[in-house]
Image (cartoon, rainbow over all chains, first blue to last red; front, side, top):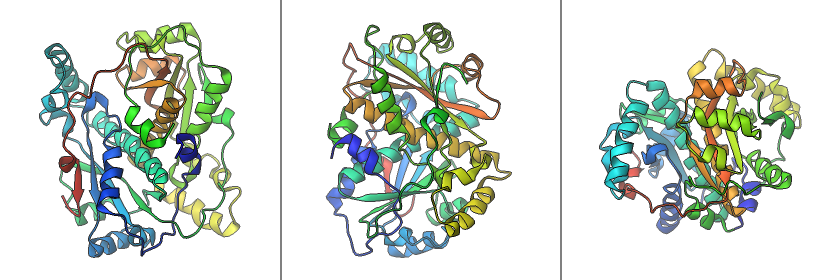
Length: 200
Length: 200
């Protein structure tokens, strides 16, 4: 599917066919595309947790205002971030670069994040957003639909998935085969209110 | 361009042709595609500031470690978010919905964000990430390249662009015609380290 068409056609879908299955190959393809999303300093701070066990899906649904897409979707991805990624052997992220690049970038990574928890958290949410849209557009191009969700009890879901102490959940994406067309967009702001030139 | 190809081909590019111009139509097309990105509760909290004035570009470059893509790119987009979007006449975001939907969703928006500054900030960064990847993939599909950037002095850039008190900058994207192919990826983590099943 053409990129512009995928961007236009992607809509949040809440009614999925509970009998539709994604193959292992399709899941691998979708997540491999997510891994192409950019991260600052290439720290690859996102972690994608796929909830495959139906019992865990039920628990997550109970922590998500009982929204049916949580259990009906073919795939439920909880988009998380590792807040320690920047300091967890960052040499790995630049292993194929020149020594000169490594000598420059590794101290830069340290200085950018060290002692700055809000900067680290902002990076987590931003990275997850970048990867999440990659997933949703790729799903559309695979003939599937998606629903981005942040309407759930983050602490409860964190407990269910054994979220490590130094990780955060950013949001979830349900992916599957839609059974109902979404409504038309509910109220979009005009271009001129969103796009500004030079200064606010 | 096919969506999968755009996802694979998008790379952070730092060397742009300073003589390449984007037409007004191309800029409008690119930003219109950004407006298709999803936001929680449709609050459309992103704001896209285009730095067109060469003098302001120079000021931003000085606040961005003198990185040349800031002035050489055809378009420089500072991706910001309005932290008050959720409470600034949210009826607008659901104007075309049914009264029943509005009656449900408007109190839900209030309760989700009211008194929760970290939730509001997370939403800002996440929304900007979702829109930013839309911009970068759309740019690729238009035959252009991009560079996502958060290596700059956020406070200094905020002053230059007269960022309102209740707005934040998430990151910048430089868009233009590349002059040099990017290096191969510097060190990607294995799929199994990033993609988890059911629990951490």
